[in-house]
Length: 220
Image (cartoon, rainbow, N blue to C red; front, side, top):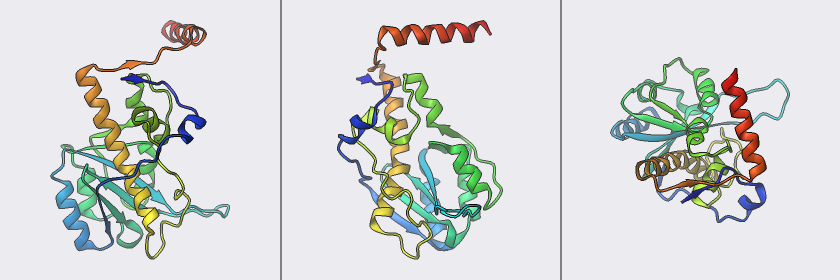
């Protein structure tokens, strides 16, 4: 497999769309949260993401409304605007045995910490993790496009995540983002295990620039 270092918007636009193929569960009560977390606690690796209602007024902000946590088969959408960040979820985020994989996790956790204090453990930040495979892009959409030749739709990103009822489009978007993080990590782990990949060669002029920059860093 040839791993591209970057992908441009035109290439991305022409790729087929991917959607989460598993079951999506919307969680909006304490009892549902307990049952969902009981299942998630049995999984070794989870993909996570969050959504916050966008603000179009200067100075106005909202708390994180949705926490998405996905296994390969199921994605749970925890409606934190209805339930809050409860102890079962905190226990899951603090569990050192279960790996949590996401992108821009610093931002996700910063928002989640505004709901309740906790100390997240065993987390993988994909923006950093993909560098060892030569990938320079940092967006989930581009990283996924590079590795799977499919695109993740972003059409629901600025929708109202505090709506009384989430639309089918919102649910699919939210689940796909969390699952995609897990999918990326699993593929990269498999490539690392087998060594069955090659990083795309740079044009000679860019290769020289990278080598020069590396030399400058080493000399500091």
